[in-house]
Length: 527
Image (cartoon, rainbow, N blue to C red; front, top):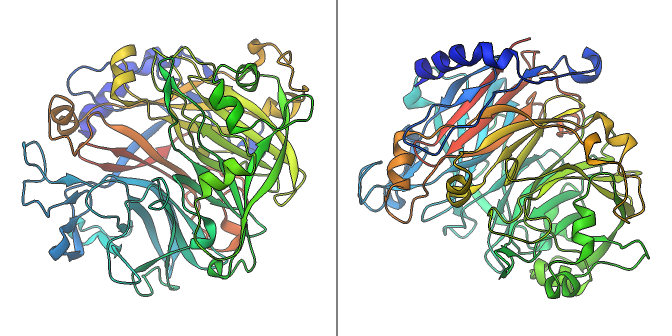
């Protein structure tokens, strides 16, 4: 696979050399991050290789068939990307094993070793694995960190993951409606091993369809929810919220605190509420929100205080917070003192939708501090038919943000194109998004242009599933888990605290090719 991939890059090199060059500022500001665009996405036809920008190549960090060094055989948790409890073969069979789909990545250096942690999104039960990046023997490379809760039971499958340096634990999100979804924690010791391997539900953070999870420097936990609303006009009504949890004790998230949700205000100062946009999903506000150059005032509204369990989605709606069209993941922009938070919105993932905001986008929340009670929101990149289904997000430098797609099989068919990874230059954001919510800000011609750094392919196993494999396994490959980090496990290593330099060996980049063979790749960037 690697040989074919590199050969294809060689064939595309000349064409890519004439493609759009994403200009960077000084090396100090951007880390010297330059990307030549891949000219085209991969068509949805047969088996296709991944195609990366000529300034990068990828090497596999782990793949689904790798055995776990410490399997939970009784529950089928035996391989990195497969649960074998149904007794079927690993792949490409009518009764193949459940593909567990490693998802978002967290890179940490603990005890002098280099580890990559992941939650698993599918299968009969949730679990967390650790890839030892220093281990050269594949059979010894992947360890099971957790697949049981504090009562010894299974817990939900996991979408999001981050490292909380204040409480020294992995925070895991389960993307399901209340009461199943929510946030779980697994403690690690100083060597990167599980303290007891038991996941603890953090009731105070609420129950909802959380995916994105991220700390800020004050110890708050930001959560991005992805719950699709009811169908209308070929799309879905806004039904998901952005949250911030303010803990009573940032070193002990079980001690309670206050969960807040983001409220966006119209130009007249009144809040945009769920009842309004769900009754009228073509509300002009949604069009304005997805227009480059506009911005809107925001406020954080309290939805729940205390340690007990509650339905976060219902509480946010009752508190007049503002729902969005499937926001999924977020990250703080480096070098801004945690005053700028960027998050993706997936949208409707269908060309049949006639609703405003149907293609989603990338949004920016700007505040005077991470704990400020008010701020502003503006769109940093507007989605369209060729740039849609935005999911995971990571900064490769201060100004260059990597955004990857999860458009889904249906939209892949509609546009005859598999998923892509894009780079956006957001250095101009300081000069935009300062309108007053009236939809007449800067012209879209000033918007940052997307440069394709990755055209994802489709491996043989995903092709089999897409062509009629068992319904419990997904079809086309998906790009997920884009992650750039130097592995610093301290407070100084929270994503957004440092400006990345992907050409420095300390900074490493990972992404996961979900579905199919479930390969997690490390990207090596060249100057």
